Length: 153
Image (cartoon, rainbow, N blue to C red; front, side):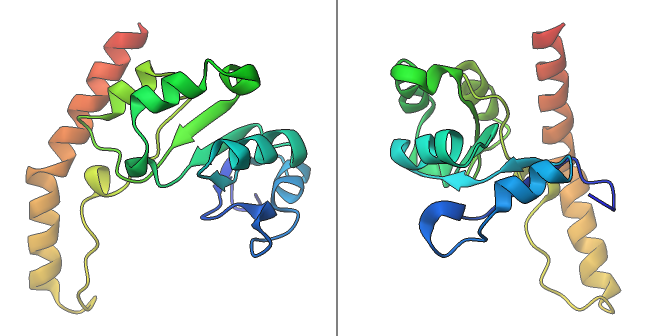
């Protein structure tokens, strides 16, 4: 928060017994949106109803589907929860997740490219990775942003 963060994602569910206790509370006290991770409907419920999370990251989303999310949102209070699937979301699947009722989607490698495992001094490899991103991931990300902008205007 001191560095300008507006949200924080947790890679695991704080109530699982091995996550940071008080993650949601600490974020709220600092004016930061907490997004704890959950996988099952029970975990999602606990994050919202017991921890007070305003948004829950469904992770790993590649083990879910947009239709499963849509079905979940028809049950009880789940339709009121703000959910953000993350993990395996691509530029070609993001719109289906949003249409299924996601508040947002978490996207990494399809927007920023794959991890670059080279030495910072290896400028040739870094340049090649930048070229690969510029030719593949950057146009995909721009096209998705345009489609989403058109869909919301």
